[in-house]
Length: 184
Image (tube, rainbow, N blue to C red; front, side, top):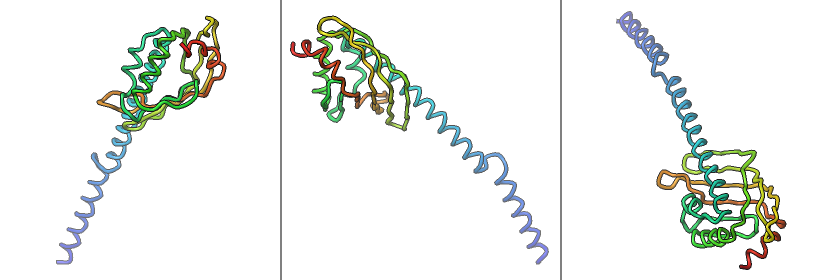
């Protein structure tokens, strides 16, 4: 009986060793899970990169008076915030959208680009950090150089990345150059 128990023990032990080392083992599952997570993160980073590119295309369109791209990119919720180069904070889509409408009506002209982009991708939120560079036009039609830091926060809303926060450094030179247009 002892001999049978010993043989059964060896068989069980050997079965355990082979089953834990073969295909579908925990190690393979961890590798597959890590690979899937990495692929998901890369996909999300690409989506956030595209959303960030859409933001700068929308800003440039707004400088010419076209507000549609900004309206499509931003979440229309009450908790969004915008802290642009003119200082202060605007909260909620109603106020943010009204400010964009006012700025689009000024038709600043010019162009801005995102440089030195850094992206962090979560599962349903992510952010981008960059340097905004370019120029806008003053009230007199003269170019005003722009170069400041920016942070953009996005979240997934109905399967699309929507902007919920935009913040840049305060720009006294830009505020001064557009002072007359802001009064109109």
